[in-house]
Image 1 (cartoon, one colour):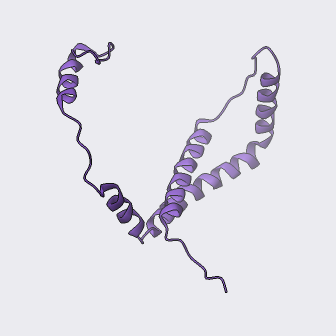
Image 2 (cartoon, rainbow, N blue to C red; image 1 turned 90 degrees about the vertical axis):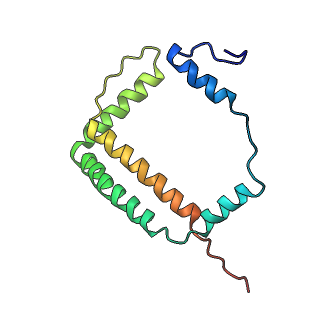
Image 3 (spheres, rainbow, N blue to C red; image 1 turned 60 degrees about the vertical axis):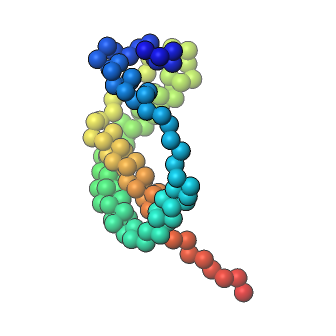
Length: 130
């Protein structure tokens, strides 16, 4: 192994590491980054991203609203327990989080990422000042 090889490589990974370490680094062609960014910004059809974000976000938001309406008192107790545990020296807070709630929050996060991507690459509307 070379002098820069990590010490925690498993024996079956050493051959792959040697192979990849033997490949010399190559610079990207001039203008490669600019061409990739130009292709990304020229894309005008982002409607499917908004549709996908809505299809993921709306059911998750509806479920989270239902959870808040149905089990709002439990949520209040959870928040109180977490605040009490954070402000005391002993960490003895007990609370239960439903797995479907965590899944709904994760899906909502994915929908937010898709919507953020769509809003970033959407063509900017420019207004002229008169």
